[in-house]
Length: 135
Image (cartoon, helix red, strand yellow):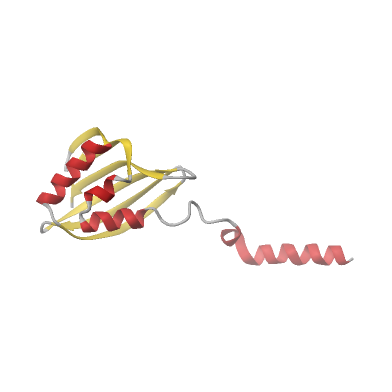
């Protein structure tokens, strides 16, 4: 009788807690927080640390499949022409291994939409695709 009561209590507790609290948080902290911080500050060096070895970079319609170092130089040039003032994440979705976010970047007196595709694994996350377009 005690076993039945204990089992019923356990099932009731799990039912009340719900599935979201019973599951661990996926891949710890939000990967878009530091990426957004580097976009807002224009820190192309720290941003490039998040780049995959090879990634697709679409800057204002110019699409490039490039290495991390090439993408770093392109971002350096972009930030030199458009000094960032504010970056805000508007939407996030997806789950491991692929997540994406859409954000708004105010830079150089203009507004840009930034779309990020990030590949996540147990040990690391990398930007696979970064797209910047005028709003």
